[in-house]
Image (tube, rainbow, N blue to C red):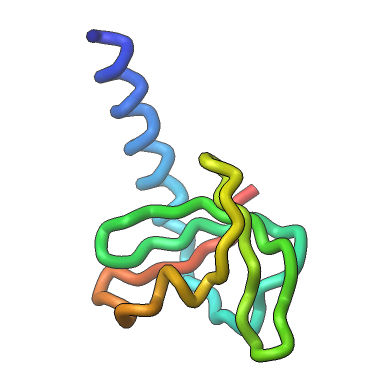
Length: 89
């Protein structure tokens, strides 16, 4: 039980550190092969851009589940006040 609490704290600390980056980036600056942290409505996703579609959308792969989906699925219900998009290493 202690391990789970420590792992959760460590993960939350890493997310906070990544959120301290100076400025969020725009969708236009996303690059194929780069990894990003996307936060919307309190949900945090770490994704890697796999492909850019002709419609200007992006196919991304979730780094945790390895599931592929379009980036527009994250923002399909709008962008909340806590929306952020950062490049991660």
